[in-house]
Length: 370
Image (cartoon, rainbow, N blue to C red):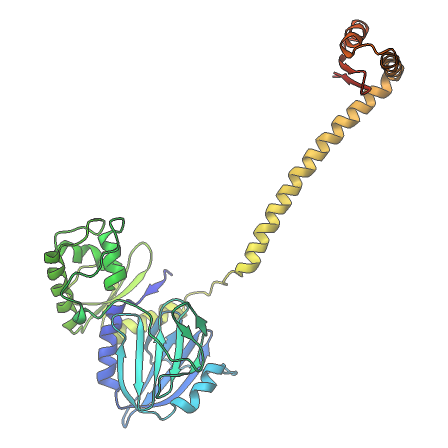
């Protein structure tokens, strides 16, 4: 199965529905139900709701019966006293980023659905009380006791500025800029660019006039309330998108209500055979070992060739021992009488053509053997 992508505009539609449906309900339970999988249960006077959270990037309503893990991780235990029986005031999205916020009477739950994914429980002062993955960057720290800060991300489309935002430089494409700075799903990029008579691969920045038209289009999309959704696929992945009148570059797998599409996504993920993740450290060690083995093999081949050459020379010397002995004696006499190496070489070569060079001073004889 291809990776499933739930972009910011879809979360915008879902959180709007969830907020209408579940605000003023109470948190009943938060449990781990599998590796990187959690269920958050809420209850109201006449109904109970559950969200299945599958990190790094999926959060959806579920009707499936889940069995909690026998051993619950620290983030669940640490969140229990803070969360249970708290009233949900609102369920919103941070800008158009893949971040869902459950605002409680005292504190918040933050779901980060990007990167490795993360669950963060905050107290009333915005301090982190429980976290799934502690992280630290140059401008942002996620660990217990720290004040939570949202990462920089695309602004909500109803809050886009009138003035054209900063372009990323002429080397950047229009499509890349729209995806990165505006949070437009890549599968929508061609259609939205076409509305302003541009192409995603264009490298020239927008004009102020084009920006005004694009901004108005995105603000209209932001206000639309989706009642239907699509599950599509392109070459790289599958996409969950609201039906708001935008043509997507992809093949429709299924369409239906939010509940139907979420159920389909859940089934596809659950029924996909698990692929064991590679241990990056061991993989690097294996590659390094392979390289060393190949290097040693080549060195061994070189040594074997050298041994063969030396063995061949030794066998020749043994077979011509008398001649070699006379050569050595001749060179020793030449050195004693101070005869030049050139003269000695010429005289010896007349009798032994295999001699290439003689250095009487150093006592060296160079032979050419077959």
